[in-house]
Amino acid sequence: MTYIFEPEDRVALSVAGSEQCFPVRRIYCVGRNYADHALEMGADPVRESPFFFCKPADAVLTGSKEISFPVKTNNLHHEVELVVAIALEAENISVAEASACIFAYAVGNDLTRRDLQAEAKKAKRPWDVAKGFDGSAPISSLMPVAQCGLLERGEIYLKVNGELRQQGDLSDMIWSVDEIIAELSTLFVLKPGDLIFTGTPAGVGPLQIGDTVECYVEGVARTEHKIVAGR
Ligand code: MN
Image (tube, rainbow, N blue to C red; front, side, top):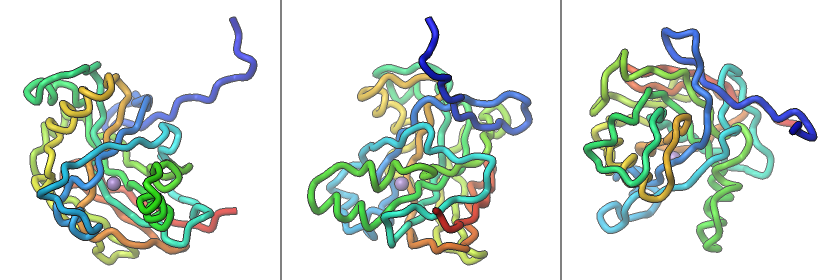
């Protein structure tokens, strides 16, 4: 059996200290996993639990350091996040079993058309066009757990043109990474190649054409990308 056209290569992430790369299967994202960000979005972190949404795997941007400002938005927001890379199948697992599934960490930017997201929330519609557009998931290379160990705390920040916009600590997450993996595994069968964006701390805000965005997670990675005009 042959294909009617050649399928695209899978998006893959480079792995620090390795010649091998990590093929991306799915991208899951956690919403409102830091109390200070939930508050700035007008939500109540005590009464509402975090939740999940997805981005398409080919929304990952790696290697290229330029991001085209997407059309159909006047309010493109940055959200710096710890990203977890999964390398074991997991279905309905316990929190205690979760850390064995983690292959590596990265730092990513959950780019968001905030204006379209606000419209979607108001109309009780899905978030796909706000969260899952092309290039909406710029991400660093992967830092394997074998090199950095399992993370429970560490600084996370985002700078725009050298100015600090978001800052927090991984220990401030409402759901820990292990809790996220366990919860997600009750909803979907996790498989090798899956990425999980684990939520953003407070300080999200708009990006403009020409901005340089720096994303950092202590002990994991620092990555930089520039926002350029789209077509
Ligand atoms: Mn996010």
